[in-house]
Length: 192
Image (cartoon, rainbow, N blue to C red; front, side):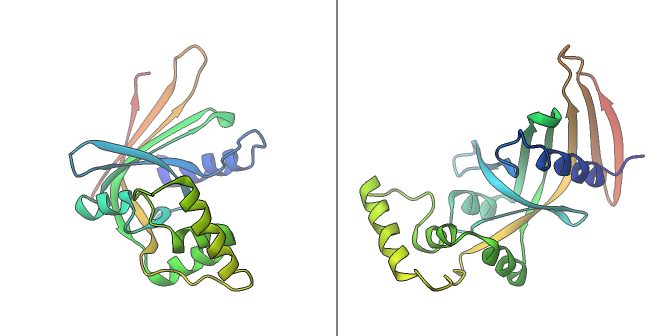
């Protein structure tokens, strides 16, 4: 039987190496908001490993607040150049601070400034106020490394189910579903 994590790593690697894919690591993470509705947004996929699927975020962002209330999340990706859709769901848990530091340091300076000086998902007075705040923060951190804020880190999603769909123009898609019970993955082919 196939290992779904290894398959997912292979498909993502093929997608990232395809020059036609613009956003190489964009995946949609869906949480359940305070009103009980699903709430999806794209994040930057950082890592796929046997330990789980990793992305970074502010812990006090909308998704962070949602995960704190209910750690069950879904992730979806459409990697068109390799004609694969990936769907999975599982439980998100915070990564440790040393791993958060590693990913923080790998970010572009403007991304660090925005994460440190903006309150993601909260209302703003105006677009002009946001731009002014960013401009001031850029001047402040022009030649310095922005330290990782305590409210910024990442989540590792421990998948419980993974579905891989290989697209076919005829719509006779090839769908494989892997469901985890304990430490074992169970495989099932699904109808298109």
